[in-house]
Image (cartoon, rainbow, N blue to C red):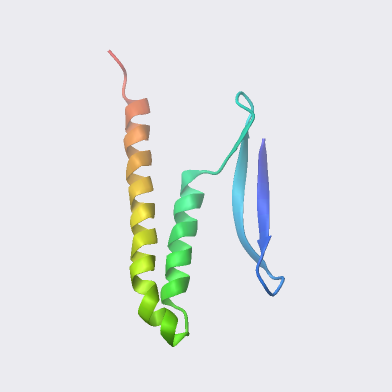
Length: 89
């Protein structure tokens, strides 16, 4: 079963929408990794695109960190997918 989480920003406008997946066996809500990495990259991009002069100076290292976390998650997911796709002997 899928559900969606809606978020409104400070102005009340709709913001980020993350898909939530309800895993029935463990009764756990999960967020697909692609949604998480996309969100991290979107935050990084918005920080670096900020018109605020102070943000333009301070945002790059934080944005690079978030992009790096997203890249690491992607690599871990690829490795896990390859492991599950490989036949075991």
